[in-house]
Every structure is written in structure tokens, then in C-alpha cells.
Image 1 (tube, rainbow, N blue to C red):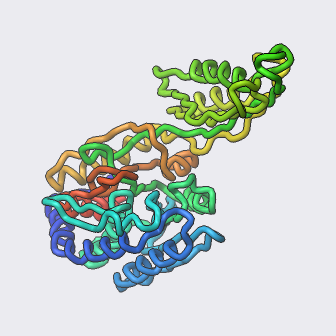
Image 2: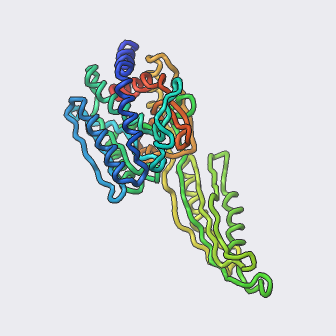
Image 3: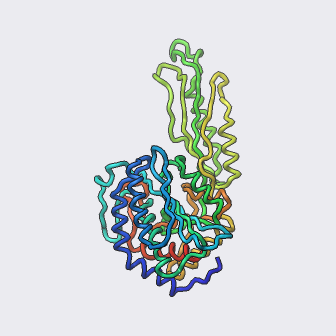
Length: 391
């Protein structure tokens, strides 16, 4: 990461994206109006087709691969600059094409501009960023700033639902051959990149007790609801804010009627942690749960979904390189540690340095006010393009 960075080259990238902004936004609008909620096969394929057409417009010999996720959608893999020697590993760039917004959202909240803001479902997280990365590859060719190593771009179709439909395995396989990785998720507030992300775990706890009449013979019952209530208090006590570890029981179900001692109850548990050590501690404590009432049978399913992305030396070096590029573009690039996870967590678990949150600034991910800021497009795109060229 010792490549010389200068303001003149940075300015050429920014000028390129300023001149291309209208065309970029035209494709962004087409993408957001082509709805692709997670699991919508037709929408996923349509978005991939649009992106492949844009990728091929670079004039570069790209290897483009559509990877089916059966009954769910399609992942997209683009390999660029394959002539580059990559003995030290490839540059992996990761994003996703699926959104959390259901079909019909664009009709209810059409693409619109208000001052410097562009609103549309899925524009911030992250269809605008899918356009940005393809344009960044194009810029590297036209500005004769070809990357120092092969670039592998993966856009999955299942990130918003946990990457369980092939996205995780695809990313992990490529990460094993990567020197470093860039993740196109939206930035933190103020355009800060993400140098640390908590890992996540999802568990379901079920209690099987014994039903009885609550008035006539309650002593013959064993309440599953009471057991779950006791477990909830214990689970929340496992958290350790000083270590960044939190637990939340977000869903509780149980019982049939108020006058019946409940025979069944369940709880859904969300866990967040900052280190692998904490992940192991919490997972063991939850999976080895013991009932308070010996008459109640307790079972737990689930586990760690995403490992943590820890701010290690490799991540810091990657961030400092990005800061130098941003400085050449005349802005300060801040950093943040966040509680939410991304596919970058899977890459970090392969001991690959990851810089996350490189998307265009905005707000409202997953919300009705989702938008990007148009004045950030050129400089953010220039940051990504110059990073790809110099890493």
C-alpha cells in the first residue's frame, strides 16, 4: 500500500465522475425501479442483466458470471484486469443487489429529487453503489490507472437475509485468495468508513412444560412461559457493554389461554459481539442453557451467523491508505465501529483486511426516507476508483 498518491491523479478521477454523474444516475434510477427484494427471482435476474450490460460497456475483457441461487435469485461475479500479477492475492470488492423493500415500494415512494437528496427504496443500501463500482472499473481503464492486481467483484442477492443462499460460501471462497477487500455498504453518519463491525448470532429457545388448569390444579402444571421468562432475565445478564456484547430477546411466544398453565413457549434471541472470544463465550452460554424448573424441557437452536470484523493492524493500514486518497481529494475520511454486520464480516474471518462502508453518503437504510446525497457522488466514486487503482 505504498503506492504514491497525488492530488493531480485524484482530481482526474473526480473530474471523470463529475462528467459521468448524469449517466450514472440514469442507471441508478433504472436499478431502483427494477425492484429486487430478497428472494424475488425475477427481480434479481433483471437487476443482474442491467449490471452485466453496464459492466461490458467498459470495453475491457471482463469475465462475467451469473451464479444461480435456486428459487431465490442470482449472484453476480465480475473478474477484471486478470492480466495483472496477483501473487500476493487479488483485490476483492463486495456488495449486494437485494433490498429489504417489498414489491410495490417504488410505486408508493417513487424516485424523486429534493435539493441534494435523491430518494428511492434501495438507493442507499445499495443500488447506487453497484453502479458506482462498475463506473470505477471503467474509470481505471479510461484514465490509464489500471489496478496493480486482479479485481474480483461479487454482488450477492441474499445479503439482507443472512447470505444463506450461496452468498456466504461464494464470498468466503474468493476471500481465501484475496490480499484485501473493499465493501460497498453505506457509510456511517458523516460518510465515515467502517473499520470494525460487531458479529451477530441468532438463536431460538423453546420450552416444553406441562399444561394444567390454572385455577383447579395449578400445582400439576409446569409453566413454559415462566421458564422462558426466567431464561430471558438470565440471557440479558450475559451481556457485557464494556466488551461491546449485547443480547436482545426480541420475540416471545407462548401459552394458549390465561387460565391454562402454558405447556409451550419460545423466544428469539439476537446477540452482538466485538471479538471472537466473546462470540465463543456467549454461544456456549446460550447453547448449554439449563432449565430453572427441572420439569420443563429446554431446547436451543441457532448459532453465530456472522463473525466480528475486528479493527486489527491490517484494517488500520487499509484505512490509512484510504485516508490518504481522501486527503488528495480534499476531504477528511473518518472511521466508525458499528453494531450491524455485513458480508465483510465473513471476509475478515479469513484474516483478510477489510474496509467497509465505502458507499455514497446518505441516510435511511431500510426506511421510508432512504436517500443518497448527490454532492457526494463524484468524490466518493473517485475515492473508490483510486483505491482500486492503487491497492
